[in-house]
Length: 186
Image (cartoon, rainbow, N blue to C red; front, side, top):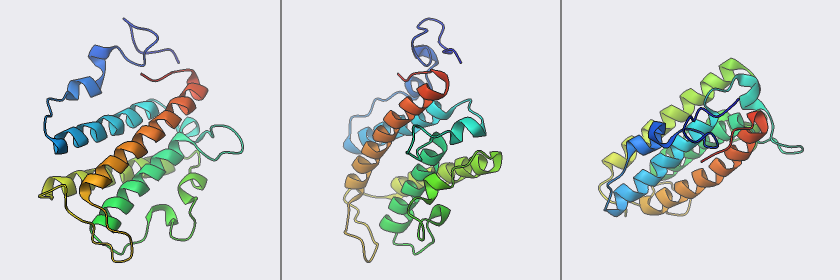
């Protein structure tokens, strides 16, 4: 698939059509800066998966890795759930994809099936929305996690960790997407 860019064909999208640029930022305080970076990387990951069918989403990067865009999507939904619902809120709930029993369930269960892809997108969007609501309600970045057996972490530390997590996986997604159809990131 060729680039959608018209002015700059080597880019994913022309800069004036990039939804990340449209979101913009005039953030000056720490909280807004952290949230803008996290929003940017969440959107970047979503762009990397745009326009792919179930087979392409589930296609493995290179052997012996089980990494795929679908696996990364499932993994990121799980990450959002664990950090916000389980760690920060202290909820005792089953982890997505059965990861309580199988640490690799997010990647191993990433199979080329439209229903699996739809479920992954629904879970990721639900967990991101919950995380955004949690952060909106938090009175301070100094808010400390409530999980009884995990080491305490502040909301500030968590947001920095998620920025790092998404940035790393966006790099993986760049390489996987290029292997699928030759499109490269920007």
